[in-house]
Image: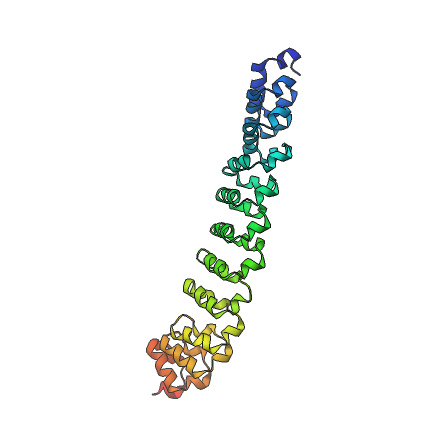
Length: 288
C-alpha cells in the first residue's frame, strides 16, 4: 500500500518515515529532498539516503559529514571537488580514519591529515600516498600499533628498510623490525651493535659474513651479549672465542668439539660457571 500524494507532502509523515527508514527519502516529494531537516533525519537513519538528497544539499558539508559518518560509501555519491576538500577531510578523518580511501590524492598526500587518520584507525595506512608510506614519522606511527605493525612492512619501500635511523626507531616498539632491514644494514657492524643495545636477540639477524667475523663476534662474546650457539660454525673451534665464551658464562660444553672437551683450561672455566657441564667433559678430566 502506497501513501497518497497528500500524505507524501505532509512533513510530519515524511519525517516519521525517513526516521524509521532513511532510504524512504527516495519516495518523498522533491521539496523534501531539498529540506535539510528531512535529509539529515534520513541520513542519520541510513547514510546512503544521501543519494536522494537534492544537489544543493549534496554540497553541504554538514550533510556530507553526517552521511559519511553513518556509511563511508556515501562518499562515492559526492561531487569530486568534495573529495579534495581539506576541511571536510580533516573533520571526517578524526572519526573515520578509513575514509581516506575515498579521498583524492591531495588528501592522501597531506601529512597532517594522514596522521589524523592513523590516530583514528591505523589500517588507513594502506591507503595513503606512496610518498607518505615511506615517510619515517608516518610509518613509525603505524608501527606503534602492535596489531597492525606486521602489515606496515608490506607497504614501505626498500629505501626505508635500508634507513638505519628508521629501523632502530622501529625496533624500540617492535622487536621484529630488524627482520625487515635491508641486507646492507644486516652487514653493518655499527648498525648491528646499535640494534643489539635495544634488543640483544638482533644478533640472529646479522648477515652470515658478520657472524663469521671474529673481530665482530669476539667482543660480543666477551660481554656475554651473544651465546656461543649463535655464532658461525667456523668460530666454534677457535680457542680464543671458546675461552671468552667460557669466561662470560655463555658456553655449554655440550656445544664444543670432543677435542675441546678434553682441554683442561676450557673445561675448568666452563664448570666454574655451571657444574652441570662436567657431564660433557672428557672422561679423563672427569677423573681429575
